[in-house]
Structure formats: C-alpha cells, structure tokens
Image 1: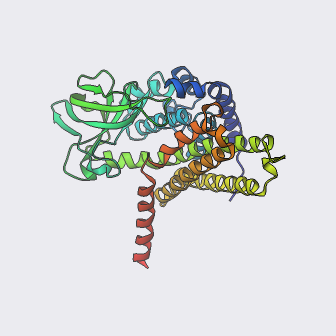
Image 2: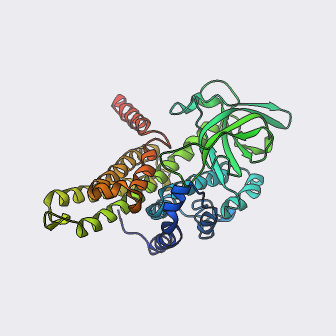
Image 3: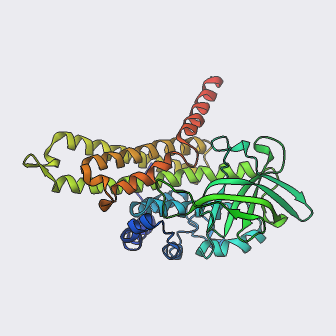
Length: 383
C-alpha cells in the first residue's frame, strides 16, 4: 500500500491547480453572482484533457483513471465547486458513451464531447422519481426506426444549454429492468425546457426541467440494449459519487486554507485568533476530517480503477463521508470568519452554498446509508 502519487499524477494535479488558480478563481464570484455559464473556460479545461479524463485514448480521451480524475476535480473545485462539478457530469456522460456506446456512436459524439464543442447533460431524475430512480415514468415507445419519448426530467445540470442529453426512459415494465438509455440531441423536435431554476448554489451552471413531448429519437441513438439503462445509470453513478466527493474535498480545502490565514491575521482581546486553544482545536478537527475524507475518496477511486467487487460500497461510503465532511468544514470556516464569512467578499458563503447540494445529488446521503446498510446486512445473513 503506497499513498504516494506518481510523478505523472503530481504533474497533472499541478496543471489542474494552476489552471484553477489562473482561469477559474479570479472569475468564480462573478460567475456565481451573474449566473454565468463559463463556456470559454470550460473549453480551455477541455484543451488540457479535463473534459474526457477517463475516456479511452483511442477514442480521443485522456485515458486516465478514476483516482487521477479525483485529483483533478479536487483542484478545480478549490476555485469553483460549481464549475468543477459540471465538468464531472460532462466527463460521466463522455465515459458512458465510450463504455456503452457502439463504434458509430463513439465516432459521432465523442470528438465534440472531448473538446467541449458540445456540452453534455445527464437526465435521470424526474419530478416524481428522485431517490427511487427505478420508478421513473418517462416513456420510450418503438416506432419503426425511432423511439418516441414522452416525459419530464428534473434538476438537469446544463439543461437548456447542453448539446447532448443522456436520458433514461422506460421501454418495458416497472422496475429497473424496464429502463433504457438514449442520447437525445439538442434541437430534436419535441425536446423543450422549463425555466431556469433559482438555486441556492451551483449558479455557474444552468439547471432546468427537460421536457420530452413526442420526441422522436433514432434507434441509433439508443445507448446499449433495451433494458440496460438502469445498469448503465448505476455504473455512471459509482464514478459520479467519487467525482462529487472530490469536488467537496476541493471546496473544503479552499475554505480551510482561507480560515487558517484569517485566524492568523484577525485579532480579538489583544491576541490573534490562532492563539486561542478553541480555535486551534477547531482547525485540527477540520484538517483531520478533510484528510480522512480524502483517503476514503482515493480508496473508492482505486476500487473503481481495479474493478473491485465492493466498489459500489466504497463509492457510497466515500460520497456520504466526504460530502458531509466538506459541508461541515465550510460551515466551520464561515464560523471562524464571523460576520465576514457571511458576506460575499471572501467566497466562504459561496463554497458553503455550492457544497450543500453535494449531499443530495448523485444519490442522497440517506440513500448512501441505505446502500451501505444493505450490504452489511447481506454479510450478516451469510454468516
């Protein structure tokens, strides 16, 4: 067991850190306040290979692993968790096309996804199907050389702006085996969008309902076989949970660094805040939680890279722990800043708002606990 990063990993982590500091951090507050989707910055990230990190090299991707991706997303999220998280979603869709698509689909879609000439979204959640994703009601009915899709998807990141939507729809009976995946292109007749959601955070990426009303999608845009959709969705979410855990690490690490600097400068009662033991203990707990979350995230990423049998469990544990810890660290950082943490000037409240949703998406943390508990009970039943 070697926790040291390779020279190559150190190199691309440093590349991501420099890009985040130079191209993202100076603009993150404006993106949040103006609800600006930073397309040029995203394409600049793609030029560094950050749009298809674990897509195969032979299909235009960077060909890196999930641990490599976690390192990159943590660095990007130090500057802007919202933008880093959108990149993680785009990466997930690119990988799903690479992993489950056929040669024609890879040749057709991946070149533009790799460069972010096309932006991608993932559409699983519905107004009536959140944590119970297998109960989704969007329908896809075969009609000759196409499927006709009808339904509504909720909270879709990139909604209204993305060029490609990976949509899960029901082609069969109830339950997970009746779900199929489709690649729906922007501009398809019958595809429309609701108004942009007014969100607490994640303001640098658009979010809205995706509406499918008699949306005719060619059979060639079906991803995988009929009935494979839920399996594809869950495979994507294992990696998505590691990615969002890594984004929580980045936001928390940045908040901790700011808090550490602040308590060294701020004086009360004639002493720097860092001289008070209660502040020292708070910093120690924040740093320890961050390191524990990072190790769990790296472990889950390694389980994915090694295709370990317990990888879903490891991803659920890492996602639950890292996203809870990340939010808690940001909250403690805001407390150390006092009233200054509550205003926009310092960026602490933005990180807190951005990281709050990480405990909800990619499967709520309550669902992560359910996955973990079920696995533990299965082990107990076999004893």
